Length: 105
Image (cartoon, rainbow, N blue to C red; front, side, top):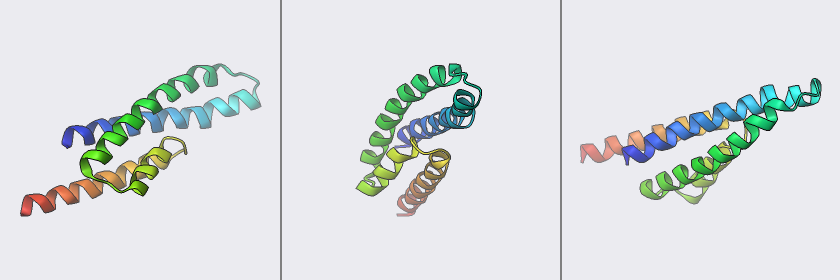
């Protein structure tokens, strides 16, 4: 499961950073300076990476037997700025605690 967690973490950070660039740089440039170049480049990249992120999140949720709502939170994390970092931290903390509990048994 550590491989699935590592893949999820990499994708969560990647998607989170691209979403922040899109929202905090691209959208203001598009509407404030009438320059849609950043959105035209970063938008499709984020969309493609989000699909990969969904696969990684689903794989991790399946392997770790996370609840439906935990999976929904993971899916939503790629759509709302800053949420990817928060949810990634929570999921990692939960799974590491669960792993430590299993190791004690």
